[in-house]
Every structure is written in C-alpha cells, then in structure tokens.
Length: 316
Image: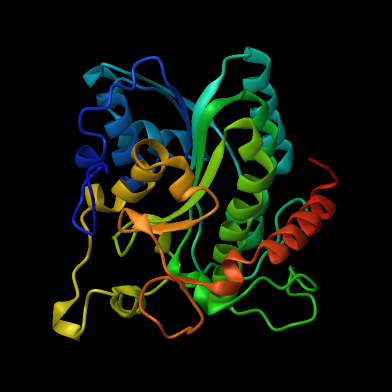
C-alpha cells in the first residue's frame, strides 16, 4: 500500500521521491496560477514539459523563472482550443517531431461565459472545455507510450447539468451560462471514461480530476460572491459555513498530479478523482463531493464520443 494522500496534500507531497527525468509531459494550460504550479512541480522533479496556452505573453509572465530553476525543462507553444484548425496544427506539429509523451494534462478551460460560438460553429464552453480537447488528445494519442496517462481537469459543476446530446449548441433551449458550464464539465468526465476504455489495452490510462475549491482566473465572467457561494457548497468537508476553506494552489494541483504520476493506473483509470482519491459515485445532485452517476455512465460516454466525432468531422 502506497502513501495515502488527501484534501490537504500538496503538489510536492504527491510527487515526493519521484524522479521524472526523461519524462515528456504535455500540459494544456500555462497562464493561470494553477497551470504554473503544475508546471513548476513537474520541472522541479526533472520532467521536460511542453506547455500550451492561448495567451503566450501571460504564460511567459506566469511561468517566468520555472525553467531556469530546473532540473527539467519548459517549452511554451501557442494553443487555441476554440479553433479546431489551430488544435489540429499544434497536434500535427508535435506528431511530426516524433518524440513520445508520458503524460498529457488537460488543465485549462473557461467558466460561465456569455453565449457565443467558436469559428467552428460550436457553443463556446462546450467547444473549449470539451471539443478542443477531444481533437487534441485523440490526435496526440499515438505519441503516448505504454504505461502513460491522460489527466483531464473537470469540476463539481458537472452536477449542474448532464450533456445534452440532442442540443449541444443551445439552438432549441434557452442559454444559461451555468448550465453550459455544467454540461461541458460533464462532457470532460464522460470523455475520460470512454478514452480510458479505448486506450487501456495499450497500457494507457485516463482519469478526470477535480482540483477542488481554489481561486484562479478562470472565473473572470463571474461575480466573486457567486464563486464564493458555489465553492462553499462544493466543499464536502464543511459541515457548516464557518468550516469552509479554500484550497491553496499547491493543494489544488495535487489531485491531478497524483492521478498522473503517483496513483495506481488501475485504481484511477476511467474514474473521477478528488482530494487525491477516487470519488464516490452518487445519485443525489445535492450531495457534497462525489461524481454524479450520469457523468461516468459508459453508454452515455460512447454516445458523447459519437456526437463529438460528428461535430468535428473526424473518427478516432
């Protein structure tokens, strides 16, 4: 039995004693404080990190001195998850290099933005939080070595809404920013479930991680009091309002890193993880913690995969 981690565990704690020299990690997201902490921890343990972000200027500012601190390395590249042309170009350029990957971490996303569509005609949150990753990860999958991992960050907001396979673009239903965010959060989990099923025969496992209640820049479209109230509701350890605590950024980074590098692949493969452990499957949308049963339904995951292929015009 390995070391047990939990709510208070930090990124350095879950990676303690792990030598990542010679490991190549692709991280989608480099401009938020959470991205920077994940990248810092990986580079500090010797990994060679390729980090991709839409805002390279901000990414350079945030990751500043990480590469110089070593012993690993950091390369920043441009990635716009809202443009499938750009996603394909990024994936193709990495495939052309021919260098294998050991872990893909899908970290970045958007929260509760106004109604819009990307250049590909897909509702913005569904496009950036799910479809962009669907294409990117599937195109990068040939680079993954046996024994590698894919970790997709999602959110407890998945309990706000299941995916709508009949109306993913809100063409027949009124748009609600939080319902959209909930749908895209659920889509991330279902994608991880089906991705794991498809890759595990190659020795590759996929997991979906909830970083917990942390303060990041993702919620720029949301009033601070709304985020505070939502985060308090999602803290399953808070039995009263006074018990609520934000996680620190290193604590928020821990679960994804645990799933990618420290946890047993059989334990986390195809599962939703939180607080450095596998989440309980729950059926009550008012429950604190856990993952809603519809978000890990394997048949639902297959149906979303088929819809996603139709939307992007590719089969994997």
